[in-house]
Length: 262
View (cartoon, rainbow, N blue to C red):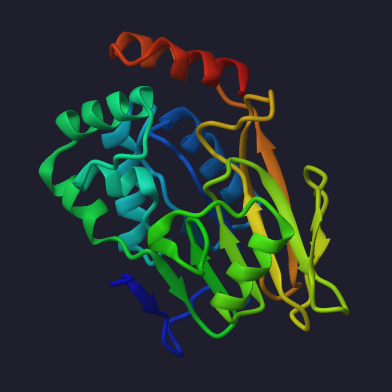
């Protein structure tokens, strides 16, 4: 059964606000703190965390504590595959990822594990859908890595806007006049007009583990009144985050990826 919830009329506090969209934090406290500070300076009035709060990094409790506090204040939070794996080990993960998840399971307090377990896979209202992977089958963790996959997810969402993570990349898919999705590579810090007469699917990038050879944290801001989305990269102390991964005894390859942005 898909744990999908609906935001009812009157509960969408994001109307007329700037929403910060943050995905794939992966227990990187330094990156999350930098993005939250940047979003606050950018006028964010609401926050949406698009899954994979934990995994890989050395600060799962610190990250979940912050997100839980934001959730108590009305933030949107959905579950990612790494969050789900803390509750139930996933057989498809490689040895390095599994080792990080097993370590996370040991160090994370029970109440924070319960917080992750309660998260829905998908949240939507009349105009926006928030999901970690594909809205077509959220529980299967399919990657939205092509126009065809984006179209399948957007059609399942049945909303003008779908916001996702999972692929650790920043891509904006849009529906053309022929009804087909196309991909657009946004420029950092440049607002993109996303009028709601067509469907859009935004992959907002990874806060905690970008993979495009740029270690700067990635997230996006969506201005609901102006119908604009802006993709950002935020430099942070990635060397400190990598150092903490090594000190925790986690696989050195994870630290290297954080250092190099790969």
